[in-house]
Length: 117
Length: 115
Image (cartoon, rainbow over all chains, first blue to last red; front, side, top):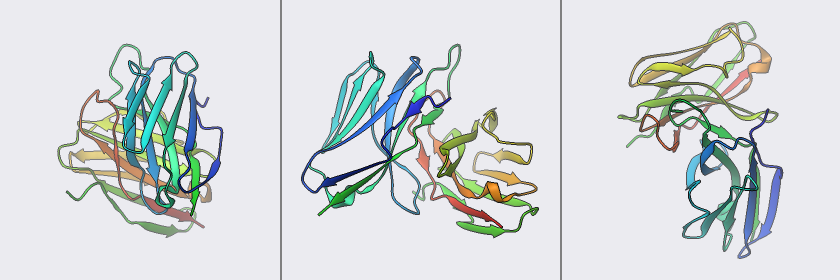
C-alpha cells in the first residue's frame, strides 16, 4: 500500500523554464508535506515543506502547492537551472491517530529531474 | 556541524556473512531513522528510534535484520545472515524533536552489495 505516489519517474526541462513535479497521497490524516532533493552518492536533503493549513509555500525559486481536497501536491521550480538536476522525493508526515509520529515520514518513489542547458 | 555520519560508505560481502552498518546522528537530535533505498521499492523506512528507544520496526523486512541504539550518539543496523536481495543503499537520518514536523537530516548512505 503506497500512501505517497510520484507517478512520473522522470522529467526533462530546458534551462530557464518551469519544472513541475507532482505527488499524490491517499492518507487523509497526513498533515505535513516535504520535498527532498537527492544527488547521486549523497543522502536526500530537505528542500521545502508545507503544512496542511496552507495551500502554498514559497522559498526563492521553489514553490510548493497543496490541494487537500484532491490529495495532491506539486513542486514548482522557476526558473530551472542545470544544478537542479537531481532526484526529487515527496514525503508526508502525520496520519497516526492517538499519538505522536515522532516525525515519521512516508516517501514517494522519486522523480528524476533533468534540466538541459 | 558534521552532519549525520555513516560508515562504511561501501560494503561488499558474500552471502551468509554478517553485515553491520553504523550511524552517528547529529548531536542533540532525539529521533533516528534507518531507511533502505532500492530501484524497485524506493526509499523505505526500516525502523526508527526516539530517545534511543525503538518506536516502530514494522519496516524491518525479516528477522535477519536488527537495529540497536545503545546511546544518543550511535546506532547500528545489522544483517545476519546477509542475502543478495539485501543489496541496496542504506541511509540513516536524524531529526531534532519528538513529535516534530518531520524534517530529517540524512547521512550519505552505505552502499551494500551482497554477492
